[in-house]
Amino acid sequence: NIIGTMSLSCFVLVVLFAVAVSSSPLGTSVSGISSGAYMAVQYEFAYSSELVGVGIFAGGPYYCAEDLMTTALTSCMSDPELILLSVLEGLASDWALAGTIDNLNHLKNHKIFAFSGKKDSTVYTGVVQKAIQMYQDLGVANITTDFTTDAGHSFPTTNYGIPCGVTDTPYITNCGFDGAGTCLQTIYGNLKSPRPAVEANIKSMSIAQFIPYDLSASDISMDSTMWYYEPASCNGNCTIHVALHGCEMTRADIGLGFVKYAGYNEWAEANNIVILYPFTVKAYLPLNPKGCWDWWGYTGVSYPVQEGPQISTIHSIIRYFQKAH
Image (tube, rainbow, N blue to C red; front, side):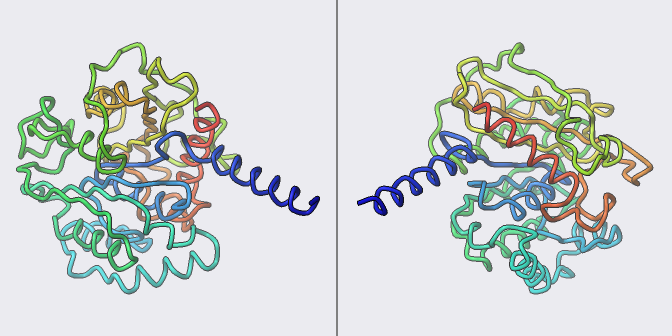
């Protein structure tokens, strides 16, 4: 049966293509702290068909700021009662129908981890809870939260950083809580116990080839160099996870502190996961003096959709590593 054979061949090609663009073996995911959490959520909504989950550390719902820095600094940080989820959900639905972000139904299969420190007075727990409510409204059921750790506005680790409960540079705190590990295990299920990270497996590369629209890294307030952790055992078959730092956590602020000490690399070493660490830079044109990821519009109105220059850059980086793994 020629038609049947052709149909089977087409089906096989479609399956092979799907495998090729989704990182093997566990699927691609993204997480972030503060502005990095907002960007992680934005990226997840934009490319939900290509991800399996997200980790949100002190971040709020998709498109929370609605293009306004004033809203970002009020509703989306300390006044969650002002966040109108019905509006945000309606806009996300409209953009999904228009094809500027993926179909929202893909989110239903995602696994979500959300963290908010009890002593975080920068991004209130209520803001993170708004993000959780938005996921629930959109039919997402696999959600794990931790709102009980005495952390400030920071990324929690088991044994590195400033005292838990303090909000200060490098915004990595010693809380006896493995934020990175909890995030990765929520998304991927039972993983092998972490192993010591290998310094030689921390590598860097230029992102120039990934930036769209003939722009430069400085044009979109991104560092021209990114870092990544790649276990030697990968052999072209590693899972991809993107970890996004927060404001005032750029290289100029804390060096490679987030890359080396957030806790992702130890889990990556044990479980054949490549951790991608793109960076922002501080800038005054565009206006980004604290080196935040763009979650209010300093790169332009397309920032929360697939055409957004930072989202597009991250997507191209992920595709590059997916082809290699």
